[in-house]
Image (cartoon, rainbow, N blue to C red; front, top):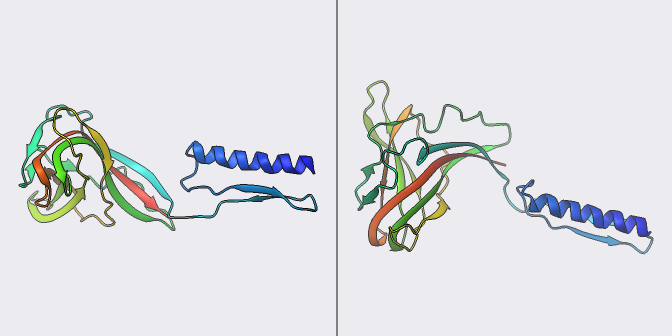
Length: 201
């Protein structure tokens, strides 16, 4: 009976360690008990929400391109972050969608802004035609929360909303702006930004 109890406790500790180390994407509800007959019982976790896997990361600002890093972008009018387009922001090394998964895209950013109420900055990809490379009013917008701070280095990091089906297109220009609903000093300074490809199960 004592051996069975120790095995149950060991199994519970092992599952808890797996969750703590991030080897599982799902929260664990682990418990163990011994019945009157001496049988050890371990309750294994049940899925409590969708499982999300980051399968690709594409840096687009603040890594390998220091020409515009830390520049301050002001106002509600979208401003081009780079003078050249981003090649295939939702393609290239992005892997195929595996069976049973739903593909989504989101962004991760390190930034500061002057917005104190309402939504924070947006990063917008303006999809280009091919082969003319003309903007066609097809946008993919990623909305970030406001930092409730300033532009003197009060950086935070955050994720944007997720987009299920970005518009087709080979390349895109990247813009940023503060939405009209944002209140405060409408300016943003990006330190780093990347596109993350997600598989949701």
